[in-house]
Length: 474
Ligand code: FAD
Ligand code: MLT
Ligand code: ZN
Image (cartoon, rainbow, N blue to C red; front, side, top):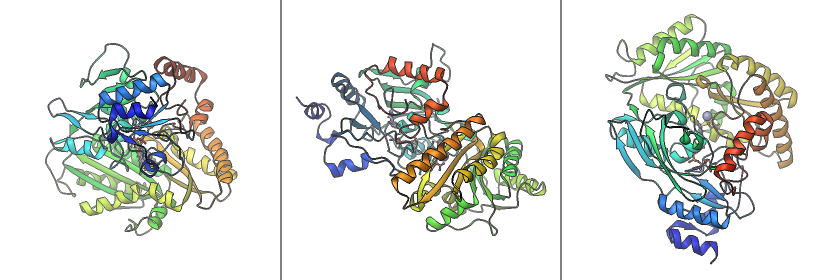
């Protein structure tokens, strides 16, 4: 029996997408950078169906590309051009399995949309802190598979820090039930950690236990302008000292990044009267008694105001705008979160998602500016990111009509310049977006042979037939 008929027998007609038009959204990534082919997109309804599909693929040596919300930035969820890879979409697996406000855990199918996971936490007066621009369409399984970061890492950590347990369909079709909601479990190797950030190369994540937190009841948000990155880094230090745990987000946008959003995204306006070369979007949050945005004496509003006054006094900030309403807060976040879409609209971005020690950020950027301009005179650098985590999205924007070959050469040259410098500074060439097909070849250059060998051995041990997302990550 052909594979398609066998798959039909396992998941029924509702679980297969065969029509070319209906398949199209699964075959191109969010950035529009990669397009592949497939004979079939399989959408199992639950873990048992997923296991049956993977077992069949294992027997027939059919490669599987697992896909969640298809919002990834590294081409990890796009099949190759051969048409031989099956796309396994998790989006029908979207049940909230259990919410436990006493254990502070949330157990979900992996295909649950992140925003729905946040809502499930809110429904029991708890908080799930993972937050990113794609939260309305990315899935928790995708978040785990990429170890997603986002805007609240500074306070709550990456996805890795937020996962307590996993259920995974292994490459041979067996189910590993590691859905434990424990804060302590020293019974050997931490298997779940292997799957976090594995980008679909070691198995299909079907269930997740997430950590919940007390729900913040008051927030304060400000937009701050500074004339150098050194000053913003110093401001970050001051905010950490003054605000401690309450400092939830410290995002950075350079003037060209902000201008790009103002040009490309409707209903946006500059937050400060005089544009600043470097901008920070700062958020404090707190639990306990609710207060208005200006806060009580000890609330986040008052704290933010006094910390910023101190920063201005010390010359770390030129200007600041404290949000006075929920609408203003949303408008400020729209400026930050509009940057991905703005780049897609404005041209072709050569993206770098890099992590550096926070203490090296300013000197890295100064040096990178020189080297990038030497490599590509007049380059338009769109530098923004999660400053509080040392994570920059250090992108170079080329005109929309740049032809394929020029883009390829420029990308090669710029990647070499930026990533070598990142390595010299002890940084990482993929802070939060993963490796996928975007960084696969470069990984070999920047990871040590020992690290590469260990990763390849793990892959070989777990997926000896190499059917899980071949051509990605390794
Ligand atoms: P997909 O794109 O579908 O897949 C991503 C990878 O995970 C692929 O390799 C895929 O094979 C694998 N995968 C997916 N689901 C599973 C599963 N159940 N089991 C095994 N493997 C699986 N990322 C950040 O880290 N921080 C940000 O701030 C951020 N902001 C973003 C803003 C925008 C506007 C957009 C479009 C993207 C942003 N991203 C960000 C990237 C992206 O949203 C994240 O990587 C997200 O975690 C991907 O989830 P997904 O469900 O869309 O995964
Ligand atoms: C962000 O921080 O906005 C994202 O990671 C997305 C991007 O880099 O475009
Ligand atoms: Zn980011």
